[in-house]
Image 1 (tube, one colour):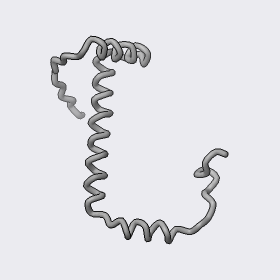
Image 2: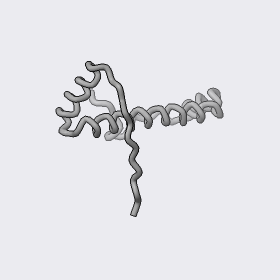
Image 3: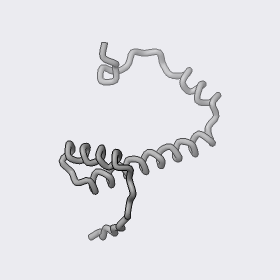
Image 4: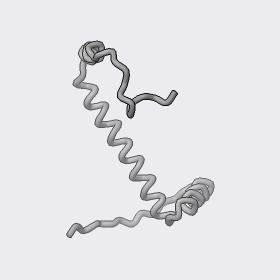
Length: 85
């Protein structure tokens, strides 16, 4: 069994931002608390992804990436990968 630790945070928001968050939470059928927690989780995830790719890019070589792409065969994409026409 996993235990989820929770922390209480006092948050001061501009009234307009709180109002918008309340409207989106109502639209999504969730509490304001759940909406804010989800929005924060999305932002933290995006920041983590950006940091991951920045770190990966530091070890990369642009010339090697271009050579790799140039070596790819010139064939049409599979049906499930094709863009709609």
